[in-house]
Amino acid sequence: MTTRIKTKTINVNNDQEIVDVPGNKLLEWLTDRKKIPQHWKRSQANLLKLIDGACELSSIEKKEYNYYDCQRIFKEFESAPGGNATTLFGAYSNVNTQKWYEVIKAYEKDNYHIGESCQILSHNLNYEIPNLRKTIEKAIKTIEEDQKKPYLKNKTTAISTFKKACSDIGIKGDRIREEIIELPLQLTPLFNEVVDLLSSNKSVLNAIEFYTNFSKLTKVELSNSCKEPLPLLLFLIKNGNATMKERERIINPQVIQLNEQIKDINTDDSNNNNNNNNNKKNDNDNNNNSSENQPNLEIDWCITEDTSMGEQPIIVWEDNEVIDLDSQNIQWDDFSMDTIEIVDGSSTIELVESGGDDNNIVNNKTNIESQEQRPQPQLQPQPQPQPQPQPQPQPQPQPKPKPQQQQQQPQQQQDKFDEPINPNETILEYRPLRNQFLDELFELEIFLNNRCFEMEKSNSMMFGIDQLLNDDSTDISTSQCKEYLKSISDILTKLSNTRVRQILEIKSSKKFVDRLVLQFTQKQQNISKYTQLIIESDQKIEDLNLTLGQSRNKIDQFNKETKLLKLNLEQSISISLFDKKKINILIPFSLN
Image (tube, rainbow, N blue to C red):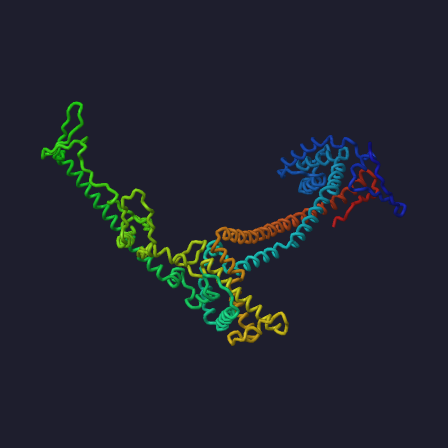
C-alpha cells in the first residue's frame, strides 16, 4: 500500500510553475508518481564495481562517492589537457575520463543518482540532523544542571564542620586517633589552674567560709566521715592538686610508714628465704655427693630382740635388763584427781593468719602469764562435787599488734572507692574524687544561689531565716553573695564545658575514643566525597563541552551538505523528471 503525499503547485507569472516537494519523504513522493522505478537499486552492485575500478585506475583513494562526487571527478579529468579527446566512435581517448564517464552513465541509468540523493537527503533530515540537535540540547542542559549542583558549597560546609569539630575538642585533625589519645594530658594543667584559682581567689575563700559558718549556725548534721563541710575543697586549697600517694601520706601518715615497714620486712624475709633455699640446696647437693662416695652405714641402737616360739618379743638392752611388754608391774605414775589441773575457759588464744614467715606468729605470752598469776583451783575428791563458780574474766592487756594488724585498723578510716587507685594520679584526675569535688562546688553554688534569692526576697514571710541568724560571719550583702556565686560559676564552667567532659570521657572510655574517631573519620569522608564529586563533575562538564563542540561541527557540516544536496536535487529533478519545471524541496527545520 502506497501513501499519497500531498504536493502544492504554485503558478508564477503563468509561464513557470513551482512544485513543492516534501524533503523528508522525497523518495516516496517520486516513486509514488513513478518518476523513479521501484527497482532503481538493482544496478548498485555493478555501480560500486565501476567506482572501485575507476579509483584503482586513477590512483584515487577508495571511499564512498555519490553521484555529484563522481561528476566532479569526471569534470576534473575532462578539463585536464587531452582529457576531452574522443575517438571515432565517440568515446574518450583518455582512459581515466572514459572510466569516470561510464560511472556517470551507470548512475543516470534508471535515475539511480536521483534515488540515491533523495535517500541521503531524507536520512539527513529524518535522523542525522535531529539526533545531533538532541545531543547538543542534552549536553547544554546537563552542563547547566551540573553547574547548579552545590558540590563546592557542600565541600566548603564539610570542611568548616570538620575544622569546627577539631577546634572544639582541641586537635589539629592531622592524626586523629593519636591526637585524641593525647588529649587527657591537657587535664593536669587545667586542674592545677582550677586549684590555683581556688586558693588565690578571695571570693571563693570567702564563699567557703560563709557556707561553713552558715552550716555551723544552722547546726547542719554532717556525716560521720566529715568533720566539716566541703572537706575536699578545703583539702585542695590547703595542699593543692596532690597525687593520690601524697594525699594518702597527708591523711594517714601512719599507714604509709607501716606500709614501708611491711615492705622492708617482706623484702628481708624474701631475701632470707632465698638464702635458706640456696643453703638447703647446697647441703642437699653435698649430702648426695658424700653418699655416693661413702658406703652404706647402719646405726647401732644398743638393743636386741629376743623371740621364741609362741611368745611375745622381748627387748634386750645391753645392760641385760629385760622389759616384758605384757608385764603388769609397770608404774604409770599417779593419776589421782589431785594432780589434774583445771584450765580456765575464759582465757582465749588469739590466732592470726600467718604471712608466710615466723615473724607473723602472734605470741600469747601475756594471756598465759596473767593466767599463771591467778590461783589455780584444785578439785578435791568428793562423793558429790559441788559446782565451782567461774572466775570473772580480768581485762587482758592487748598484745602489741604486728605491722599487718596495725595496717588493717587505719584502713577502716580510709575512703572506700570502687575504682582502682593509681598512686601517681592526681586528686582531680581520679574520677570518684573529681566527682566529689564537682558535687561540693555544685553544693556551694546552689547554696549561694538560694541565699541570693532569699536576700532579694527578704520582705517575704516565707524567708525568715535572716531573723534567726544574728552573726557577723553570715552578714553579707546581696552584691557580695552574687560575687561569690559568679566566682564559683566560673570555676564550674571551666570544669563542666563540653570539651572538658569529652576529654574526661576519652580518659575513662576506649569505646568513646573509637566513637569520636569514627565521627571525625566520617567528616573526613564527607570532604573526600564532595571533592571527588567536584572532580567528576568537572570532568563530566569537560567531556560534555567536547561532545558539544564535536556535535556542533557535525551539524554544521550536515547542514552545509544538505543545503548543497537540496540545490542539486532540485536541478536534477527539474531537468530529468519534470521538464525543467521549478522544484522546491521543503525542509521541516532551518538549516542555519
